[in-house]
Length: 126
Image (cartoon, rainbow, N blue to C red):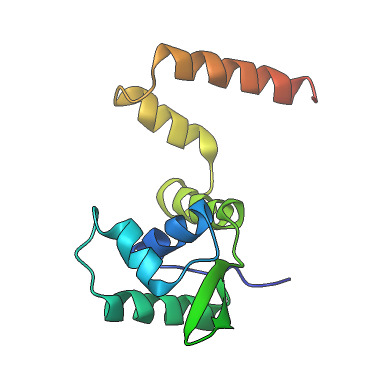
């Protein structure tokens, strides 16, 4: 079984850009993040190189530049991140997570209806 790829918060921001459309150059990533971050091209290249070493992205040579594409899917990352968070904060149990959000007013009426529907679907074996 492959070990999940762990990525930092900064790396996840770069991945979000790649997940939204690829392949992209480092300069494309800088431009896409310019409204959110004041990162220099060198910072983006460092993050891309880290992601490359981790196996989260693929780099293909295109003339004098590289085009980056994600190898790690957003769904794979979400499974790893959400599982890690639930394990770390709630002992791996989902019910305390939902109770926490409910107790702190973070669940809307629509959220509650969605949860009821989901629990019924799961209980019915759908």
